[in-house]
Length: 188
Image 1 (cartoon, rainbow, N blue to C red):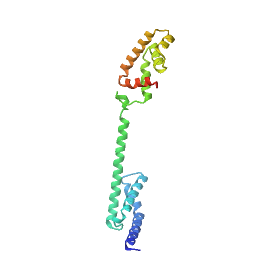
Image 2: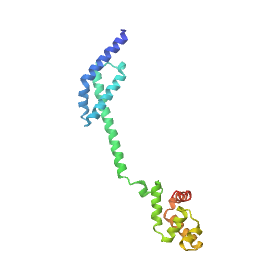
Image 3: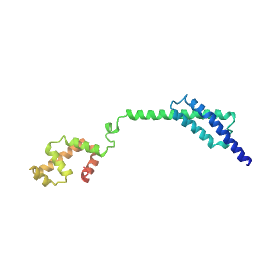
Image 4: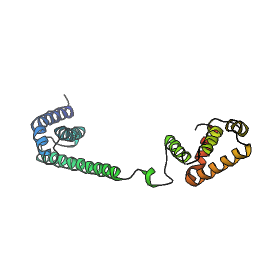
């Protein structure tokens, strides 16, 4: 065994002893900061893993090693708590904040929400207007077909459709380009 491998072997033995003697005490020390046992154990384990990764750069049996481990455990606990506080604050902010679609006219809506808004607006129309709109845009019927079914003139159908579009433009002006696209593509 070379001197270097002997030195490495001795460091590994010293590290193993350090871990076995101090893992549990450092988990108890972490309890000063964090209640959850699993989280404390994870933090202490991470400190020891980090130490293991740099085994060649330190002396496991030196006096400063315990102080270093203690400082790392404390800092990792505080970092964990700081991150938790950030997550809680963010979650609280999201919970308190009104959904964007309730207070901003240019917000993003789902397709179902847009359909719902369209149908709510159509419900404000007289029955004939609504029927003309639905038959024309949703069912793809011509003005002549609708006029024949409703016993109305084609001119009346044009007027109903025009009035419906005016109402939609007034009520849903922010969404008209998308609604027109939906209606033209026949997805409504």
